[in-house]
Amino acid sequence: MHKPAICVVTGSRADYGLLRGLLHLLQCEASIDLQLAVTGMHWATEYGSTWREIEADGFPIAARIETLLASDTAVGTSKSMALGIAGFADAFARLTPDWVVVLGDRYETLAAALAAYNARIRIAHIAGGDISGGALDDGYRHSISKLAQLHFVSHEQARRRLLQLGEAPETVQLVGHPGIDAVRDCRLLGRQELEACLGCVLQPVSLLVTYHPATLSEEGALAELSALLTALDGLDEAVGLYFTGANADAQGREADAAIRDFVQRRPHARSFVTLGTRLYLSLAQAVDAVVGNSSSGLLEVPSLRTPTVDIGARQRGRFRGDSVIHSEAEPTAIQSAIHRALRMERSSIVNPYGDGRSSKRIAAALLARLPAEPAGSKSFYEVQRP
View (cartoon, rainbow, N blue to C red):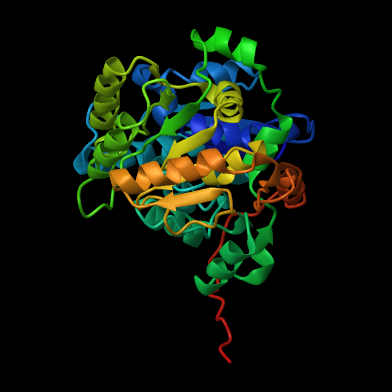
């Protein structure tokens, strides 16, 4: 007898870390077929070939969808999306899942959603309704939401935004953010074990830095990075600076090259192409602050009681807790924000994104909706105005 199938899409080390808890729960359900469609940065050597981490965790890969090209321009992004739509169309025709589960706001995620929508496969979208504000992500995220039949949102503001987009209230579930689950479920490394894995001794004062190009920045995608590096270069040379690689966005390779050049000039700076979930979270807990413009600084890092300095426009509109200090992309302002973070009382930090049980709620909701009929037309929910 054919078992109902749930296909989960992952395109990067970041979303895989968030989805791992849900994947474990679904894998334990003997009544369903869990399918994993792996795409995007996972298959690129320059981004660490992170598909190996998926296999090491015991998840069979049901479909390999190649999307990345040797270009990080806007034209290259569009061509990658076209490759993704074609690859996912073939994969879904072969796998015939009841549900396709996607997370977040990447362009390869939108490609998967478009292919599933055209095939009338039901789509469940995790972490819709957010606003970042400084990148193309908002357009991708809201487009995915309009294609989806079921929504798992992280906070009340996101729920209300989806209602504004015309999504019916019964399809929008407030579950919290799976990043909190990832922190809760991860066995973090102690300092000595972490230093052995990193191949360096952490400095007494240290920062974890992640920068992704601000794709909607009026000054240019790398202008904010230049300001960040100038600010960091003005810190005491004894401060440890540990960089992780940029996403496969427009000008991502240029950002990584600028960071590598910077690291060579600083005695206590290191850069890593990818750390993986466990190393990243362990390092985020060990440092004195997380700096940059990654959403992880707003979502997961507060659960580690580590302050975050969020720089520039990329995450400007995103819901945040009190431990996240926003700074404009100007060297003096960035340095001031870093010094504020270093003075913050870590024991008082609270994460506003849930209780670490979102994966259980998502799994239960999906399993309750199996088997699923082909997706039909969606009605537009009209918000009643006073």
